[in-house]
Length: 502
Ligand SMILES: Cc1cc2nc3c(=O)[nH]c(=O)nc-3n(C[C@H](O)[C@H](O)[C@H](O)COP(=O)(O)OP(=O)(O)OC[C@H]3O[C@@H](n4cnc5c(N)ncnc54)[C@H](O)[C@@H]3O)c2cc1C
Ligand SMILES: *[C@@H]1O[C@H](CO)[C@@H](O)[C@H](O)[C@H]1NC(C)=O
Ligand SMILES: *[C@@H]1O[C@H](CO)[C@@H](O)[C@H](O)[C@H]1NC(C)=O
Ligand SMILES: *[C@@H]1O[C@H](CO)[C@@H](O)[C@H](O)[C@H]1NC(C)=O
Ligand SMILES: *[C@@H]1O[C@H](CO)[C@@H](O)[C@H](O)[C@H]1NC(C)=O
Ligand SMILES: *[C@@H]1O[C@H](CO)[C@@H](O)[C@H](O)[C@H]1NC(C)=O
Image (cartoon, rainbow, N blue to C red; front, side, top):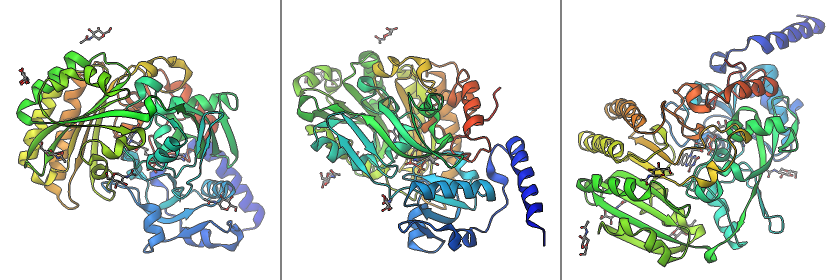
């Protein structure tokens, strides 16, 4: 048996070589048997920390994923009760070299997550703390808090905030990759509302990160936040409700034959829309009418008369419509004929191809729509797929100086997302979806207004170049931060940054 001092020297050499020679991703790490490590009494986990292993309900809950196409795989899960236990997990993973993956609500879908194999789920979905400070006008949430969790408490306290467009992802998970949504014209990205975070770093130490505390890291967290640590709480600026919290909602349904007319209307009248208007257009298969439809979901943040004036061009299409005034906390629940419930279903194979758009191009929109229309007819197994066009004004996003954060795409005001979904085992549809996804991404890129395929980190598929996700001009500084704050690349699976660039 080796003597302890020999082990220390080996460990020391290990640390030195780790610092210089770790692979960029941990995909090739040998599997470490985690059970004896985690249940060893020497760990002294806090009373509310739980550890679980495969074939138990706790393990299933701690490893559930939204998409199960090429998912990360796990051999153990931990629900830490305290920041101290998160530190212990990080320190253990660093010294024993096993992969772990922070889990908020399990909605990440980057291909890089598929490289995570036989690892530990660091499941924070139970961290549901939520605090509203009315005087300071702030909201502080834990990493398990989803948008669904904030709507009612915030509204009831008389406030609102920019959010993502679905109820199910974790608020912090969305924030750390930018956070686009309907209010980005008025209040910016969700990330722009952030005031500070608590983060357990790769060194296992807890830090407050803000404009005044570790400002260099703060710049990096605002655009590439998954790369530097585990965020245990986040504090946001909130806004008092306007117009009593009433917003105007309108859903329009048109047959596929009218798609061109619809897209022309969008390009002509909404290319420079007011910050109060947000629109999500969805090309989908309607199971009631058994046909392809254009669904246009509109939200107007203001009084109904004003909304009807602003939305006159779309009303003038005389499409089937449903309109209503709802409270801010009901927008997602009441929009798009139950779309949120449909898209939030976990445990389905899905594959997403997305792109930023700087301009709205009816030609580009229509060309893509025709292709998805054909796909719906050719592949009945793909009829849960949606082609989503998000049309969000960007005034407040563009108003933040570019160098204030690491986020590189403040000029976008639209997003294309083809969200392919099929039944597990349907390889024919899976294959056709991948082929069409590539093709659509290329097509939409040509009319995006960008000279390259630009895609912000939350929506990135994971097969893009890092320049196209993080932006060439941001990468040198981001790589330096990665090297400083995560030199051994522990946070390696969700759109990992390099430690050196170029
Ligand atoms: C249905 C759906 C709707 C979406 N809507 C929007 C939208 O409107 N706007 C938008 O911008 N994006 C949106 N997204 C993309 C979303 O922002 C990302 O998928 C995000 O990563 C999801 O976070 P999560 O915590 O739910 O997922 P997870 O899979 O739990 O987390 C994804 C990764 O983020 C990192 N991470 C998560 N939590 C933490 C934490 N507390 N500390 C450190 N790292 C962490 C980890 O690396 C993790 O692997 C949507 C995604 C889906 C599936
Ligand atoms: C676990 O217990 C500690 C100590 O009582 C408490 O502060 C913490 O909030 C608990 N954690 C969770 C996730 O509930
Ligand atoms: C929108 O504004 C931009 C910049 O001001 C301008 O170039 C463009 O022509 C406008 N588009 C429409 C359709 O009005
Ligand atoms: C299907 O189409 C009908 C008629 O246009 C519409 O009322 C209904 O809301 C649509 N369903 C979905 C899920 O979009
Ligand atoms: C909508 O209806 C009005 C009134 O009937 C009519 O004048 C108009 O031409 C119609 N528009 C379209 C696009 O069908
Ligand atoms: C969503 O709406 C349905 C019916 O309209 C209602 O039963 C449900 O409680 C709502 N959910 C939330 C979270 O508001």
